[in-house]
Length: 229
Image (cartoon, rainbow, N blue to C red; front, side, top):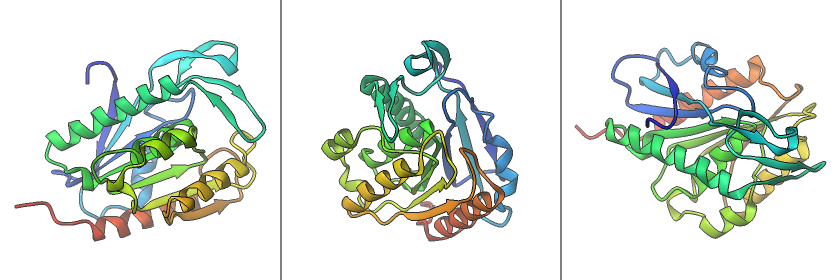
């Protein structure tokens, strides 16, 4: 993993599950690290949180300014995004390498969650729904599906029933709530049953959302198969 840097936080020694958490456009891996203690996971099985840093690249919709970005956003529509699909696939390759790294360290794919905020959530959606091995779940926050056609073409049978926590702020003026709703309807069209939450907030996270994510993670962790002896 020399091509990408990341932060790690373990809730206790010898973690038996992992969460790979992708930050939003212009942020970095430290963005969501502070919420780990707020998730109420002290009594849950030990978890390893991996917070990767997106590569630096020019972002067309921001005047070509170089910033941490999972993929280039070429243009912003009111309720749509024109994106660089090749860059999106490159971001998926990073996530797949991080998943493989956790598997090599003894955590099976079915005990690995993908999480992401905004642009990171878009990558989490694509990576999870097209991953060839089963994953534990997806946490998609204030985000959208960047390429419905790509997911439709490559939807993986292994994750057709993947548990999903999906949340959006009703006052979001960066990724409009309608884009979150579009993603929700597409997921339901695939036969998935996301747990959908809205919060009276802008493009951010709030304490109630963090509490709800923690409760969802505890529930999903309790339902995971045991690690082989």
